[in-house]
Amino acid sequence: MEFKDRLKERRAAAGMSQSALATAIGVTLRTVQNYELGSRKPQHMEVVQKMADALGTTTEYLLGSEGVHVVNAYERGGASAARDVEALVGEIRGLFAGGELDEDEKDAIMAALNRAYWDAKEENKKYAPKKPRDNK
Image (cartoon, rainbow, N blue to C red; front, top):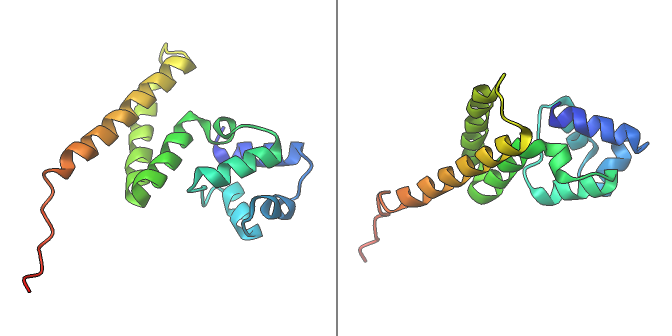
């Protein structure tokens, strides 16, 4: 089940309209509609936490463990990092298809790969070209 499906399911179970949820979490109605259509996902954990609180659930349930990594990547490194982590998660998910790993083992592997991604980004900073100085 994807984020959009979990959100819609929890909102219906809570007996909330899209408009009421939007008001509760401080976003527009259109934003909630886009979340439920799957054309947009929250970019900040603060919004996801407000959503979870309003719906009586957890951020991990709404996003899934993989989605938590993507939102954290957006907060830490912007849209580019979120796209990178989302692509990484998608590729890794393919490796798990039909496998023998339980959910805890999958989560641990995802967390380790996420750490490796950020370690590599940090390591590569020292090789990035320096910004030219203004010679005044």
